[in-house]
Length: 319
Image (cartoon, rainbow, N blue to C red; front, side):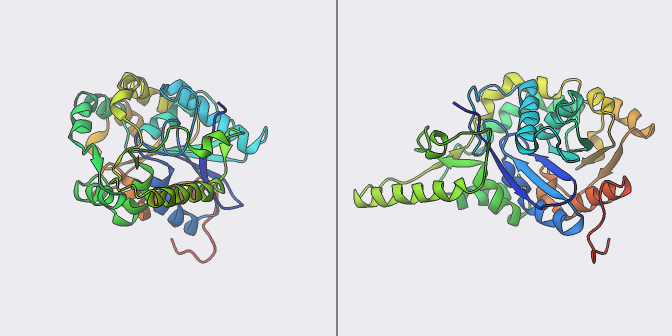
C-alpha cells in the first residue's frame, strides 16, 4: 500500500508554517489558529495528519517511533516541494513538538527557518508517562455522536475553546463500524493526499447511509477514538527522552510556548538563561494551548517570525 498523508494547506506566498499536531489529535486541531495566523503575517500554512492519525493511511501504522515519524515529515515536504522547498517554520504541539525537534535534529527539512515547540518539555513529559495510561483509561470509550464528543472535550477541559473543539474533535473520533478499507485507501497513489478527496469520502458515506436507510437498518452509530493511544506506549519514551538537549542543539532560532512556567526542566532553564531560545508562558490555557488561545499563540509566533525577519506583518494589521 502506498503511503498517503492527508494535508490541509492555505496561502500562496511567504514562508511555510508546517504544523504537527499532538498525540490523538489531527491536523484539524490547527484550524482556528491557521485562520488567525494567516490574518497577521505573510505566510503559507500546511497542516498534516501524522501516521495513524486523522485520515492518513500508511503501511505499518503501528510504527510510531520518533525516527519513523521524523522521516515521514521529510518525505511529505519532499513530495510537496521537490528538491527546492521554500523556507519552512516547523511548529509542533506535544507529541508533534517532540517529532518536530527530532525532524529538525536529523535535518530532514533542509530549508528549515525556525522551530516552535508548544507545551512539551522533556522533564514534565517523562514524569507524566507513569500516569498516562490512567488518564487514557479515564476517558470515555465511546460517544453517541460527534456533538457528544465535542461536549465532553469542553466540559472535561481537554479543549477549552468551543470553536476549536467543534472542528478538532471531528478528527479525533471515528464511527465504530467504519470499514478498514475506506474508498480513499484504495485510490491512494502518491504520498500526499489532496483535499479534493474529502468530497468523495462524504459522497461515499452519504451513499452508505442511504443504502442502510433503504434496508431499514436501525443501528445506533457510536463513535470511538481514531487511534488507541494506550497501544503506543512503547514509543512514548523515545519521543521525549533526551528532548531538551536535542531541542537546544538545533541550530535554528527556537521558540518555546508553555501553558505554565513549572514545566521547565533543568537543561531548558539553563538554556533559556543563556539565551539559546525564546520562551513565552501563556497562562490560563490547558495543554492544547493553540486551541485554547489561538490568538495568543498566533501573536507570539508572528512577533517571533517578524523579529527574525522570516516574514512581515500583513498590510493593515496592527500588532
